[in-house]
Amino acid sequence: MTSVRVAAILLLPLLLALGGCASLLPAATSDASSSFQSFKQAKAAFERIEPLKTPASALKLIGFDTEGIQNVRLIPYPDLVSRLAPNASIAMADLDPGIRDCIQARMACIAYEFHFARESRERKGNFMLDFLNFKRTTWVRSWRFDALVVVSGGVVLFRNFGGEPDNERIEHQVNPLGPLQSGGESLAGQMLR
Image 1 (cartoon, rainbow, N blue to C red):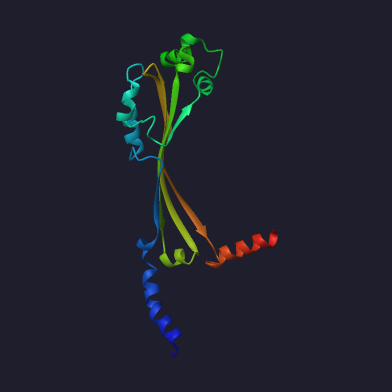
Image 2: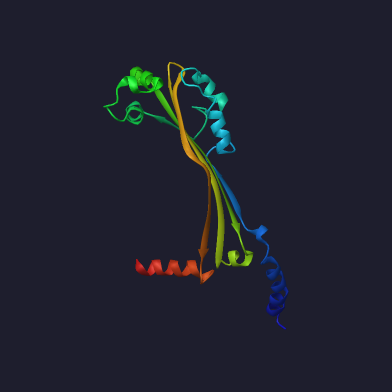
């Protein structure tokens, strides 16, 4: 027997054993913020912000740091007005008191848009089919929390939030040619150029 055949015979049981080892499949997590672990936690912190009462200096302690977090966006005043009062036919008296105060403060009114998110990806299924690129199943779980906080004169005037509390999806990928699939797609792309 040649050494190649011996190696193949010795590796075959190992490969068959690994075929059922889903724990060997990769998993990944993507965070757009480390401040909160869940949508529920972000919302609970957000609800501690009281319009016309909470000082802007307290935002950092609550978890909404306007300077230290990478996932905060400063919204220019003209864009803010178009968001908060998009219809000119709405009378000032009909607007939220915080929005009214912001419009009257003009350029002294600052808005922060926060984006917190987490996504985890976990491959499930048969290790060998996944490893050889024949069949891949990925479970994706995520949440996203978006918040708008409007500040003027050192006080929060208005706040609002949105997002997606709990998303779950399953991605299936089947490649009939297995490891040759991407090579064939690459070759076809080069031929079309």
